Length: 273
Image (cartoon, rainbow, N blue to C red):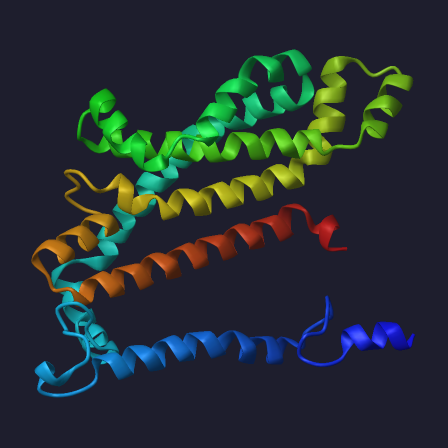
């Protein structure tokens, strides 16, 4: 008992529950520290007295003051809709291919042996390399951006789907075989049913990862989109908008992930119980 207490006392306690309010406090410390350093490095008027020039790093107040221009003149909300739509279309294409293929690979050993080398090769492919590849394959239009996101999401999602099915314990398969189930029944009623929750979480993760690729997707000839806003702000300014758009990307990703989480609780309420 005393030995367990030794590992649970103090700030460096090992694997103990943290009070939610205390967790929020602890999580705010590095964020506030970064904000403090940011303010310190960008304070001072005239701007020539600053440690870092505003052309490199504007102050937090200057960033916030530019929000009105970003929202109304540069149409932040409309650009966000374009980006979300691209990510959604790419995700749907990737899911439509990777989910059935991943389930088959996790179920049938020979199908896994057939496609696993391609999955391994895709795992080592730098995602940024897909930009010039998709440009040469699909041109510079909207279809290229969607297909870039589809391929990038597919490469991330497929191994997760295979693992979700592989993680189903063999005891369930053996029990179904003993009871006389055929291969289709084992696939649908055993492997797919048991792994469905993990497949859902894999889709949730893949959508979040696909969202982080949006800047790469909109690097070339994007008339609208959050990535286009960042790139144009970097080229012609104002630089303050780069930070605001990054914050918008983070917030949108956070909200979408919470929607996925709520959907999971609704669809798999038995997991909560």
